[in-house]
Image (cartoon, rainbow over all chains, first blue to last red; front, side):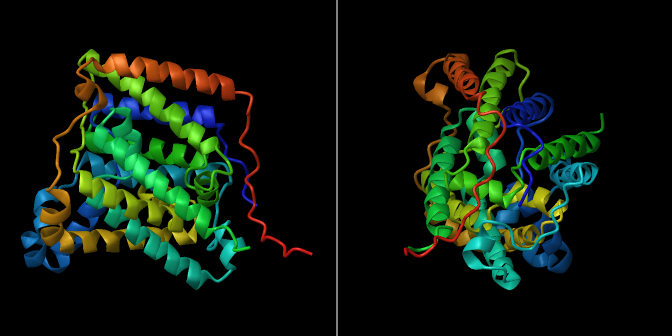
Length: 169
Length: 189
């Protein structure tokens, strides 16, 4: 069983909101999914430079490396440091509630995780942002686009999560 | 400060907060999405409430670097639905998968790998998808307050007051409840 989070929801919420304000004040809102494009585009430039240069999406998104990419590299760094300092490593392959619903098969969970990740980023790139860029940063700026994305994304996720992880009677 | 170092610092704080608050845990995320444990909903509400008030205040003082995303209605609805399905299957989102992977969660590595593949697929499909899904029904970059034609603070302050009142009411729900373990429903006797 996983231990309770180290932070109370109120503390976590204030810290996350505070960090967003620091980022918006100093540079720009927080975002993550654009950096997946920079990573894929950067790899494509190495493997198939011609195709990468001709790709309309890479042209539109501009394959640069800078502040935003460092933020996304910082995310695993920060999580690594606190999970080591607090002794909260989670070296597990099949988390709950997947384990109780679909059993301990790691190939099944890994396959689902890959498909889930594929859908997450395909959807995020189509919509122009993910939980960070749209739901945290965008809704905080009261952007109509982000509120629409948040309602559709959370609504769909709630319906599927309730259906998927509830054992049929 | 060098902007690359600043980025790494802000990202590290972001990752630390995701990890410490339980957002990097698929158990916590899925308990939220199944509406079994609302601690993370409260956390997000407080974070967004803080963000709404703080950004409106910063912006009114000319101290914010805002960036509003375009209202591509078809792309937001279809992308949001695809994202939501992926969110439910994975139990992570694009940022929390990076934090979860760094905590050692093996399945989070596959979410990141799948995410890179999904990004590549979108880049390949973009030229044919964009004219059908992204460009039609696009309405600029409106905000709630620009639509209403009132100052941002006139929208932000009431929302901030509401979130603060809710957080005050919920403060008694001190620590998040023990996550509800999905017990396999026992067959009826």
